[in-house]
Length: 121
Image (cartoon, rainbow, N blue to C red; front, side):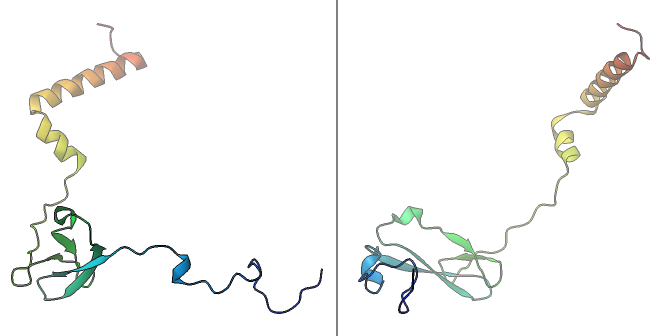
């Protein structure tokens, strides 16, 4: 099979140029501006028929990483970050010292019974 011309492989003869008319209907859009504490503006596009309550009130600014809001005069401030809690810290919030000691004693007794180093109760 001989190839002739400079046809693009996989295209149909007479297909014509591919353009926007072949890609379907484009939805109407609205532009919403967000500002962070440093005054950086970020513009996001949303569908025009999107209800107002589904448009986010705040976003993360791509320039600074700070929260950005829709009110230029009053941008949101950085929320106070809570320190990372370990698994043990969460467990200590749920259990008292007495409960923890009881659970530990039960677990140790079960382990000793499996190993055969404790009398069966």
